[in-house]
Image 1 (spheres, rainbow, N blue to C red):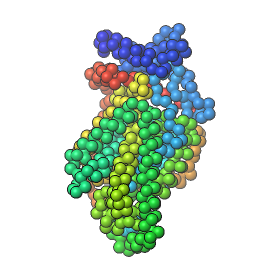
Image 2: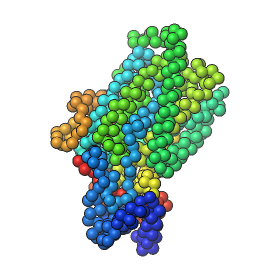
Image 3: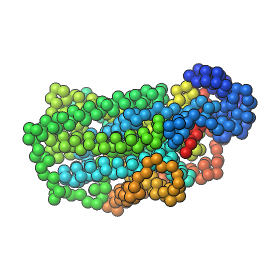
Image 4: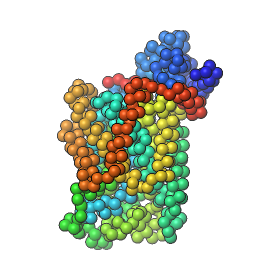
Length: 552
């Protein structure tokens, strides 16, 4: 790096730090920032290394103890420290129990319950079987989340599966997860939700025909930009948006449930009296595909594990948020499906591309506009929560050197992982412009359950390799075995029932990550121009590296 660029970056960061709320702490508390560049022996390669020392020490003395002492919450040993005393730039613990429940409920109740019911009915051909699958998906999500609660309280690093794979299997499997999740899973999840948001948002304005694809995609991209701005601006703003939109979507669910209850009271139960088990055309593969559709509506049950480092009192709030949130969502989904069938027939649901809007048109009369409005609110909140956790995955993997260093950097004043958020948003926008909802759901579900099963295997392995690790919350060992078996079925059954090249492509993409891992992570090869790019992006985005320590 040239001296001029180095001096400019150092001057900028010092000026930025003086502008933060931590300025008094830095100077009055006797802590002074020290800037160390890669060629001066810093801990990271590429970009700026941040470390600190006491005001009366020199840089070398401060470097040795940069992460020696933390400000751990005495009430929760697993919470660890927010950051070392001389590492003022870090992610802060701002997610409490209410925000944790809102994150789970808000990301689970998104577009799935408004898009998936008709697809699930088409694949099973039976009201009874489809209802059983809805309930089974809720139970499976709860069992998986309880297993994740043990993993999350045993390892309180952010990143969810990435952190657990690192503990149980080492670097390569963890890298493959971050590779697929960063480039495919999380961006595709956000793209699906934003496409649904856009479809419901524009439909009232083009009621006489289907909205043009170009208009839907434009609105979806605009929504991604808006959500990115919220999450980059402030963590508190992002969590407040999540809380408000979660409350709003629960109101929308209540409207649907009350409308369905009114029709049932009037005696409109004919669609519920014939489960049609005998007429079902479901096969082994169709049932697995129906599970994919239902589980897409439940996806998000593991999202809180991605932000463990930002949860207050995680050993209590993480399992409590799961225990409250997932049964609440399951109850809502059961009541919503009954309400749909109280107003619409199976064929009408199957023919409707926007089930909730059709429900509103049938029941609410002049107030039917409430349904598309409610759905847009619901999907916007879900997309907000999805990006919130996706940025933390980038942050965790990059901090370990498995992705670009810049993706682990945090805004020097707002303490948000802005580079990771921007990276995910760019990929999600590209997917919006390219894909369709159905194709994205199928690809997402297939690849996601490979890693969900891997997390269950990680829990089982660590019961034997780390028997004495702290486990404030411990599930019966039968639970991860059950989820692992179901995960295997969900991955293998569609391949056996209807082999497609797409499954081979997905597997090849996952294993193709090794071609990146070996040279750039295992051997440590770095492109010569990446250092200057990292420094340039630091200046543009106003971000710096950070580290966080944990106590067990």
